[in-house]
Structure formats: C-alpha cells, structure tokens
Image 1 (cartoon, rainbow, N blue to C red):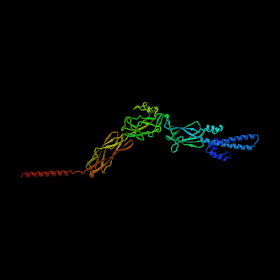
Image 2 (image 1 turned 90 degrees about the vertical axis):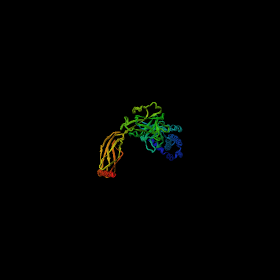
Image 3 (image 1 turned 135 degrees about the vertical axis):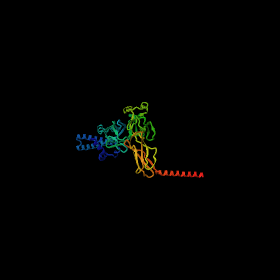
Length: 495
C-alpha cells in the first residue's frame, strides 16, 4: 500500500510543485530532477528545523497551537515534496539490463534460452553519498529494488515465441541478477527481449543469442528425417547445423549404419558443392546442407522392400577424427553414439518397390484373308522392383471380330520374370478388305497401385480371297494353247 501511495506521489510530482506556493517550484526541476531533489531536500531540512524550533517555543508557551499547526503543515508539505522528488530521481534511474542470453538444446530436442537480467540502476549508494540522505527514509523507498519485472521473447513481427509467454520477477535487487529459462516456440538466432518494470517503463532490445559453448558439439535439425524412396530412386534430406562449441569450429560429417549399396554424399544447399567437412566462423555459426542418398535398382540382403533402414549423421570435431572411427559393416546403437559425446541426427529411409510392366512383340503387322485366324505372340515382362498382380489385357476390336487370349489373366509375375501370352484374332468371313488397327492395353496392380504398360497397336491387313477353280481353268487353257501351237509347228516343219 505504501509503494502504491509513493507511486501516486511520483505521478503527481510536477502538479504538487506547481500548486504549493511555499515550495519555491522551479520549472526546470522537472527536467533536471537531481537538482530539483537537492532543492527539495534543502527546503525539507529548513522546514524541519523551523518545526522543531517552533515546537520548543510552543512548549515554553511562546506561540499558540494554531501557529504550531501552521508550521507543522508547512513541514509536512516539504517532506512530501522531498519524497516525491526522491522518487522521481529513483524511478528515472531504474534500469534493467540483459546480462546474458544463451541458447541451448535439451535432450528432448527442444531449444531453450537462458536469460539473465540485472538491476543496473546502481543509484542507491551514490545518492546517499551525494545528498547525505537519511538512511531510514532511503531504505523505506527501496531504491535498490525494482519491483514487478515482466519479461517475454518476441520475433520480428512482435509475436511472443517463448514458453511461458511471459515471466514475472517480483523483486530485482541491485547486485543480484536473476535467471529465467524460456522454451523457444520458434527457432531463431536473434530475438527481442520485451521488459516492462517499475512504474510502466518498457525496454525491448533486440539481441543475438549466444550459443551454449559448454556443449562443444554441432546440433542437427531436419524436417525430413524419414522418407520413402523407390528402388532405383534418390532422396534428399535437408539438414540445419548449428554450432554450440567454444573450442572446435571444423567438423567432419560421417554416415553410420547406412548399407554400402546405398550411395550418399553431402552438398551445400546454396552452391550444390559436395562436402565432407564444415567450418564455422564467428559471424556464421549455422550451416545448411543436404544429404543425397541413392538406392540400388534391385533389393539386396541389406536393402529390402518395405523394411525401414535407420542410420545416423554424425559431426566429428576435426581434432577427434583419428580417435573416432566408425567400422564399416558394424551396426551402432543410439547409446553407443551418445557415449561418443558427438552431435548426431537420426534419419530413416524405407525402400519401396516400383511396379513396371512391359509388353514385347516381335511382330505387330499381319496379313490375313477373311475368316482366317491370326495368332499374335506377346512377351510380358516385369522390369520393376515389385511383384505384379492380376495382369489383364483389353483390346479394341473391330465389329464382329473375335479374340482369344491365353492366358486370359496372369495372376502374378515376380521381379525380372516374363510370361508368354498368345492372342488369336478371327475376322468375319464377310469382312471388307483393308487394314485394321487393334489397340492393346495392358494393366496390373502393384502395391495396391495401378500400373499400366505402354499401349501396343496391332495392324492386320485383310486381303481378297483368290478363285482357285478359275486359276486352274486358266492354267489348263494356257497349257492347251501351248500344246496346239507346238503341234501346229511340228506339222509345218514336216511339210
């Protein structure tokens, strides 16, 4: 209650000086408050001495009670003015500083900020020596303490990114810094520290967060820590590397537990240059990189379809590269990696098979007579990395044509296997002569997905059927004609 009354007195300081005709108010006292405090102190001491003198005179009955009350009232006004001036100087000198702001990461992967605040007003002892202020009065006003300090962390759009959203320090004493721990809701390297304290004073310095150098490691972060990739395909893991070290600034990147059949390398996100080491500088303690991995075309003993592969990306300080060597073929556990006291990131890749259906044919152009059957042999291949199921054939036949497919459906076809299929077409007896294009569509199911082969077009040319009896008669006529000519020639030669 007392603090609240003193605060009200502070807010009404200028009005009190102006309204009290006996205070010798100087307008410059509001601007130069330390001089105003000196003036108020002198007036208070003079009023106090006058009150004590008049109190002695009253006891000796030299003055009346009314006269003593008048002097006492002036003394009280001078005391209030003095306290107001003292409060004005003290509140003006109050200052909360950000001593330290350290960013660090806990084992659960959350980023924290350890914020240290200090009361750097430092005016208490200086004022007492400068003004020879009464200790009792000075202590009652608590000049060494800043009350009700509210702190929060903001981003560039002034949104609160700290958890708790706002932290309160009841009392911040001079020479006794206080530390607050915040969880970062947004991972930033620079934040605004919003501070409200005292009588409503507000500060919002924007600061660059220090890194916890005691960790002595590189911390990883990746939004794409688990991916599914088709065999024969590739994946890219985007990584964010942040240095938390005061001794090492060059690190070598290692891949642990990834099968040899999976090729991999690191690239810089900006230049796309291949990397094996990173060097951090004082001005750049964060790096961005991509890990590129390439899966084999076919399953192997270590790379199996639908079986996740977990592996680690490890950052080894350059001076520890001889000490830390990962043996090829050995599977390291998370506990073994943690014992090495290195920064690491766990990633996962799941190989997925890809169905690929292909239809081969040695010949797609045929000739036929009306009503004559045409056989078209086809070779059905599984050139993917997953079994094919329920292979079906669909044909666009001309009107009145018939077909026969053997087999009608191929129930399953394993990787790299083939199957022979024969399609028999029969045109009607009265089919007009000409060329007929028949489209073949082949589909199947693989991993519950529809797979289509490239469509094939089979062309059949129907020709006019020949008259056999007419041909025989024509041949006989020709033979008879030749025979007559020969006989006639012989007779002429004998004559």
